[in-house]
Length: 588
Image 1 (cartoon, one colour):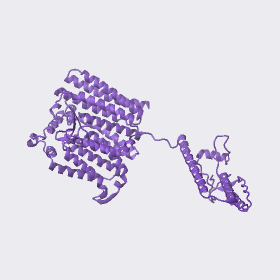
Image 2 (spheres, rainbow, N blue to C red):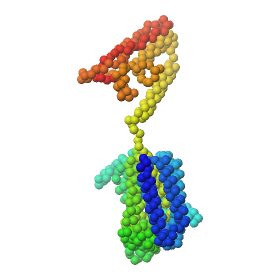
Image 3 (cartoon, one colour):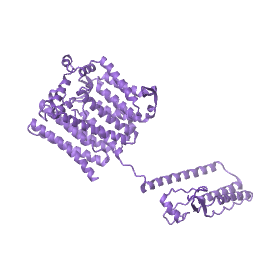
Image 4 (cartoon, rainbow, N blue to C red):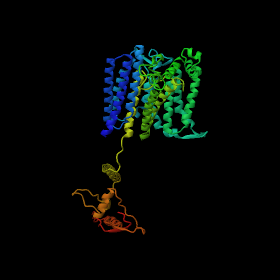
């Protein structure tokens, strides 16, 4: 265990060292010295990361230890390039990003301490739905929402802007996981087969129609293609995990493609992005307002980086508009080259793979859906950003998780990662050994308690029945004594459990059977089996014979009947004698 913890700590220290070296090299090349404000903020961030890691070891000891170092390294690369752009533009976005990072780490520490079990989130499924919808539609409130870049997805708070959709994705993921977990059986039922795919039933299409309408509403009202794509893709992926049917994915892709085509014909903002994607180097598209100038500039920045990049502080990433937020990936390619781009994608791949492994390992259905939903959300976000910059798909306006400038995106993604770590703790927690003595003793105690409660309940019910049916005269008294006699014979007929206490009665089996009983446990088989000609062995059992037991019960009842008019209670029969009984087959 100590070696494992040292290895995990070495990953954290390695990520911190790489980030510090990147800052030091960049500032030495651009400013000639290391600014003191960055030194203080970086020290605070390092301390908070160590505190978060220590809290994870204490409260979530089995959480995945490969996620947090990757997140730290991605954040370090992103803030280094943001600070590099600040040196050219004379802005202070880098220091602001470090402050947002400190706040995000504090919130993550609180979440690790307070949220011991993620399953509590299932209780607030519909509350999460309402919170997510309110956050998603809050930019449409007059006087509160702001339109930036043609999309109304921002909230203005003084001189700061907040993107509530980043937090809405968390709440909507909670609701989707709870809803699909409760209705997965109905959604998994298939209907007719078309082209080898078993389509769902018509009445089961309601949820995906509702989510599709909500996504199209975001696209229409807020003119935000990226957010609508992210929500719809998250729901379709979680639906596939819940049901295992590929037809849901096909239906989801076709439905969103049809909605996007319709939106492109209705809104110029969406149509401009599609034209910039299809014809980026066309002069008309390039020079048009909202055209492909930003996209083409980013492509030239990627091309100038080459294989190894220009080096930190030696490129010109600030020439690309929004190089520290939407086009941060282009800035990485210019100064770190193709090697740096592949390294960044590898870090994201480690995080996503760890999340998928967590979703596969955990046995709780709600946790499986929630982990897969959070991981797919991050994967879709990374794909849309990288695909938009490299002309694979149209630009969507989303930001790279952990790297792009923006406090709302940074805090929301750090909370997402913390939730994933908490779920991974439950997935990696070792199961109790079913063969251990402690587990068997506890199971035996539970079974005995249950048996005692059932006996007490049966006795209380019998007494209640006797009170509801009163008897009169000596006949009732004689019958009651007869029942007592029967109960006495049944008590004598019951086996005696061996315990290590001198006050307990002696067992009804000999020393050899006691040894066999210890080997097989307290729940050894006491049944007497019928004679079997194929059984070569015989075993002697000191149980009362069934004949003697039946005769004693019959004698007690006859005695009660004979003395019915005498008015004197019958004498209970003597306990049955323990006579040896030989049974074939060796069964005890």
